Length: 254
Picture 1 (tube, helix red, strand yellow):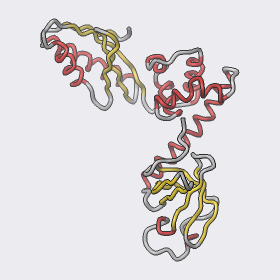
Picture 2 (picture 1 turned 180 degrees about the horizontal axis):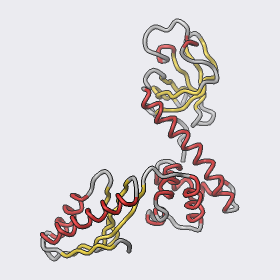
Picture 3 (picture 1 turned 120 degrees about the vertical axis):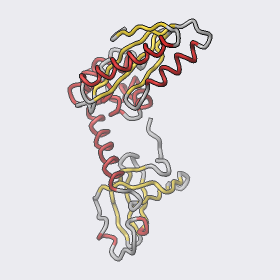
Picture 4 (picture 1 turned 30 degrees about the vertical axis):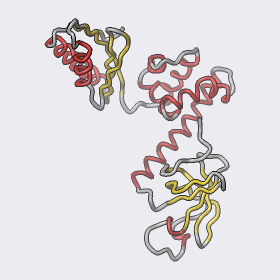
């Protein structure tokens, strides 16, 4: 659920409302009703003669939160402390969330429920779990079983997944396979943990499903590459556990 105030260091989208010779008053687009202030010294580096050479009313800009005083309702912001890379990333995330809100409205319509009802039923939980609502949609578009695999339940899952697949083009694909590992060695648990840990990298995650099953999750640019990575990782895990006296089997699906 959204916080009332941003945190110090957070990047926020703001709309410039009123410019004074000493700074600019803005509203925070992501925090309804909240206002902030950009001191002229935080607008740009160096000496500023005319503040309107750098910022204007109605403009949307990305700022960094410097100080927050909820008791007084003050939020001090900086424009100059946001680099171009941060600006582009923040704007893209903001656009993604605006898109996610529209898609969530479609989900609510198809379920014949209000948007607020859907947020209470599963929207807030999805945001807490995935970080943002857009990430939840993207995950569902990448892997139609992801929500169920992550423990979510309900008839809404199919509708949510359908909307995601219809409207979001995944940046990568994600597939899973399962290995069954058993061992009678006294240090068997340590062996299994070590072997599984060695198999992980930035594109491969191994999680415990239930003894003796472990899920290997792979992401790649396309299904061909994903299948190849999954196969190689599974072979490596089985080879290493067998060297340590254990037994292993690989299954593409449970």
